[in-house]
Image (cartoon, rainbow, N blue to C red; front, top):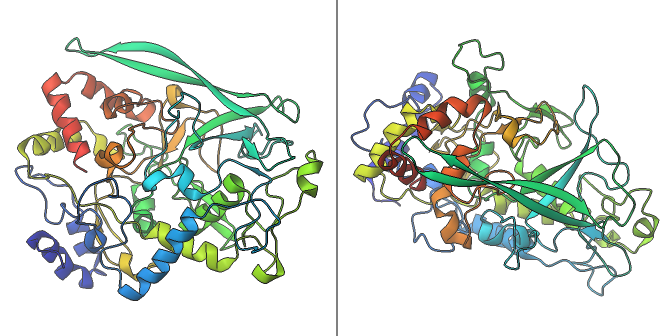
Length: 478
């Protein structure tokens, strides 16, 4: 039980939340910046982790999880850490890797459940950054490359050629802010190199994707669809320059079109589907939604298709059967958001004013009340502070990957949640931001904002250095 009156107020209110007016009142934009808002210190509501903010800050279960449920969380953690091996093996429990793959476990990309990094210690592209492949198809979402599929797999089991390598070069340039401060930005240029199965299709484009942090995913999934739709304004009818759009995508689980919430372009509807997609594309493991034992091998990769796989009658003719994916998704949904640090610090409060005045809240929506009907009971009826609207926004040509996905254009990206972002460096020793990790600091990330966010960016550029420090301090406290 937490000992703050802020959380107590929230918990007393939440059981009676079906009245929309009460929900609206709890999430109403503040006008009092003299002190933190009630419950703001606990961004995940009653699920918030309130212990030490050390390297394990992203690795704790929801604080309100019952002991019996923590057993499944622990099983999911074991699946998340499992190192898969090539088939066949004696046990059949962990074989089926690849034959083509990017990593051998979930943990290799999501170290300590934090965000990935574009380069490893030797300066090579890290496994936590993958290249998505998208073939231009007029009027439709990008299709896979006919030979290499949806993403470039840079590793393979023995005897099978890996698909190729990811290479990157950076173009450096400086931005001068209004007070004379100069910030060096780097624009990455990615290349698929040493391709083992011939050239990519001439219409295939590359979209680098960095592994995101894992906290609070179940709470994002519990935000009511009607609340997201209410925030959307695709035609910018209110004339504020912000035109958030819901990405509607096909759900393999539900067999219908639903709201996309996860992934850099909100192209996946649920944590379970995101998890199974990663098993299949990143590790080459067959799962209930993707039962092919050969992973994403195409008909042009015959040796890959004919290699032994781990599909076994003992496990429903899969390599990772439904219990494995269920435990893994439960683990991912219930990784808790850490408690805010110093929300009542005067510098943090000054930064909060600037965050609102700069218009950042137009996309980084501070708070929601989650649905009372949710996949996990822990997430039901919580007042949360994710600082995202989960909508697609035009971020300008500088960040464009020219690769449509669902209803997302090449220039559109989902608003990234900001909760826990200030602990990123502490958790896994690196602080790289945006979809390809080009930004090495929060200020660099802000300066890459274009399109609908250009006006907010210019307000940050016009700030004094002291004001920018206040703004960054606020974001780091989230």
